[in-house]
Length: 195
Image 1 (cartoon, rainbow, N blue to C red):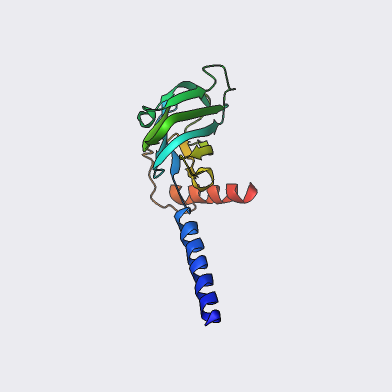
Image 2 (image 1 turned 90 degrees about the horizontal axis):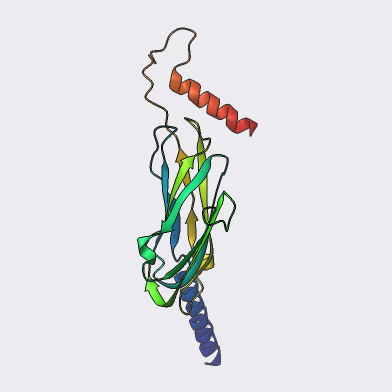
């Protein structure tokens, strides 16, 4: 009888532990969204968004980008943070060097945030047609009233890509000529091998 009670208690404790672990598996997705850009001289807009975090009380998020490719023109608080205090440290305010934005937010009570946290506008500072660069995001702190969410938040970087204009050349295979898509794939494979 004691043995059955011992195993029952052990299995109950194990099942409680597993339930807690599954609950904390993933809480919040923070990502950077960048619309498609077709020409080199176009202004680049991006948004840092959050989804699935539920109610939070505070957070600190760091965004980094290649200052040789992008120059921050403007940044502002997103609609999701309307009920919070927000501080943005970036090159415009002089609190950060070009290539880095850190923003923090806090609320006296838990607030449900879902959507845009930060809006950004960049000038193209050297990105050429066909090139791409990443805008990276890192959650340094994200907390609810009684729960730390930093470790469970999932981050997704955004990619800025300048698309080439439509190519109207004839891709009909000719003797001794590699069709354009195949030639492009061969170049990409060789770049991957050398890097």
